[in-house]
Length: 425
Image (cartoon, rainbow, N blue to C red; front, side):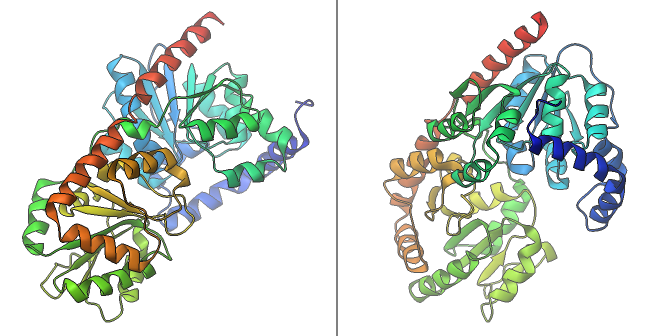
């Protein structure tokens, strides 16, 4: 313990001292819908399920995005008859896991990062291998797992240059955390270089797990219902938008309406609680909220799809999609989801979360980068006016996405090697 960096020692002491007030904070979070009261014990490391017999692979993802990326990996592991535990930290991710996980896999909320909660969690589950998706690093959980003999790996790993700059202020601390991982499987060479720079061991490029995910699903009845409401109206779809992007999409809508008066713009906010704000932002443009069950009528100009887990529905309704988090410096959301459904992809310049995916899709399409309302309107008008070109671009996007596959099998091979080394330890 004394050989650990001062920053880690201070963190461990602070989290131990903080532990008595955690129940109060979790109750407050539950009051605003950010915790599931019935499963609160899991946050203290008290398991709600028995540990399955034999070797156990534990996969941790922070929230929905990381868990979605992990689903193909979980399915492959279950197919190989391996016991799998998945942890995540948000209510939305738990709801998604309930629908998407194979029945043989187990989901639990990740324990709060106090010494006692993580110790209880690890004592019960005793994972042989622990896989952290992307880079959600909880120091107590990571270091205690390694101390218990769990072989750890970062998978689908990515880290922004901004995060790297932040960690450079505590180089010994980040190196101590990352050295707990026997292996780092990075999404691309840029991310691999960042992890090497921070001191991570055995860094390899495996690609993105998201590239191996199946196409998003959609409820057939809901699809038919919305399609009948929309009819033959042209659609501009802006998916997973953040504050600052709707303010660009709405003017693009106004420009497009000058030549396409029947245009319907569908905005799917990244955070559904923003639905009412987007409706207000729409001003005099007639808006309807899906969360309130409001129908699309001939006069509806803006349809706000402020519901969870329906992206597959809206990607099927529109011939192309603008992917959000890219006009503002959020790094962009998953462009592979519309591309797999043969939908052309548009996005702004901030794509650092999925650079390889955006690059592959844009290169296949030969276009896609937009920076302003005018550019969105111009390219959207072109695509809405030429169905043959738009379909060809959708096929190109799907081809670009397909070139990125294979990460699941590379990750499975790495897991098998870790299980062998764990068994022989």
